[in-house]
Amino acid sequence: MRMTVLASGSKGNSTVIASAETRVLVDAGLSCRELMKRMVLANEDPAALDAILITHEHVDHVAGLSVLARRLRIPVYFTQPTHRAWVRQMTPRTTMTYSKWLDHVQKEKQARAELEALETIDPAGGSPTALQFAASADPQDDDALEATIKRDPASLPAVQYFQPGTSFRIGDLTIAPFTTPHDAADPCGFVFESATESIRMAIATDLGYVPPNVRAALKRIDVLLLESNHDLEMLKDGPYPWAVKQRVLSRVGHLSNHATAEFLTRDYDGNATFIVLGHLSETNNVPELALLSAEEAIRERGKLLGNRVLLAHQSQPLPSICL
Ligand SMILES: [Zn+2]
Ligand SMILES: [Zn+2]
Image (cartoon, rainbow, N blue to C red; front, side):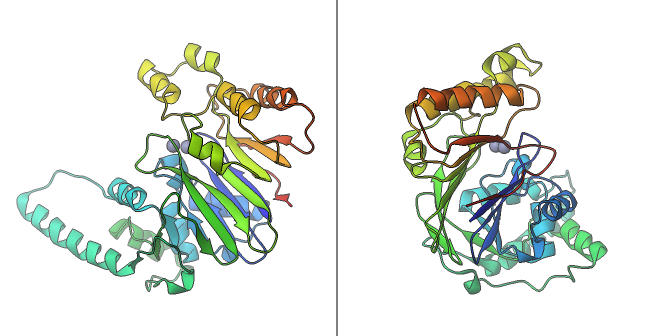
């Protein structure tokens, strides 16, 4: 199995998870162009991706989603509330006259009907072969692609729903989504397990604290991408307005270096070969500080084999981790 973090941080997140037969992209938080560039840089073939999975609708996780999914013509997996929130986010709001409004409602109705025709609601999972694909413009034709996105920004080649707490499969990958405490519609993290290799990889970023369900989900993980967002002192003394500081610090904000260290000391089972620290704030953290804090926490756990701590970057892909 392989994990390639293409980008991680408050300005964009995206990670490739690959098993023997299946490749998925978790989040698409950079522009399509940048994501394609980074995949090539990291030796990940974009054309080999089978699906895109979305953790939540914040822009640092979906910025390039619409364009990338259409270009690659691959299905996007969301929870239903996350998909709804994303559609709302993508639908431009303008003041309009009554006749324009009537026209708009009619168009929305049509778009909804088309969207519903595309959706396959199957909470227990199912294979992507069951999906219906929309006939879209030639993916090579950039102008046509841009035009269709402008016309209908929230339409995707195919949408598949999953539910946190219920595992589903894509090819030979079993995916166990778990709810995370974060200020989005229905945020989640993922545990990936390959049917043939019994290796488990997990992504847990964008969470205000580590609740029992996340602690339970993160057992027996071989490669763990874990948030280490901010240094508490830097955030408190930093330039963010008080309201934003409150949000980040809240139970539905982001994990501090301290909270991550606390998890690693108290609740982590010491099983991982690699712990990748991610979603670092560029304003309120220093990579060395996050690394030191996590390494110290691991050291306190006594002698543990493996447990190499790596830092994921915002500006460049991390070399693939293969197990
Ligand atoms: Zn978020
Ligand atoms: Zn985020």
